[in-house]
Length: 95
Image: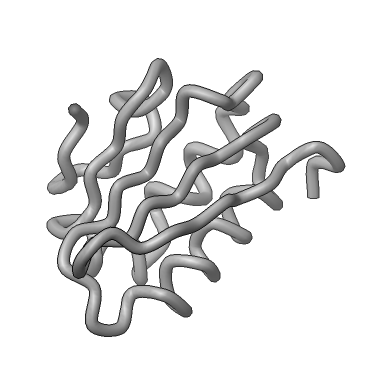
């Protein structure tokens, strides 16, 4: 895992907000996947804020976008920030 990667979360009504901080690599992708699986119960939309990412590695993108759990959740995911469109899997929203 990238030693500087962190996920900060908070709920707003029935929505979950995740702020990604640091470098997004393969291990970071798995951490985000695990967080989404764990917190997605009874959640409307999940907003993933990418404005605090330092870099996004191609392997991390590949791991995240090809994960079966993420494909199932993609319609409830909305990505914001500089890297939002790059990270967003097919079927999700990039704002």
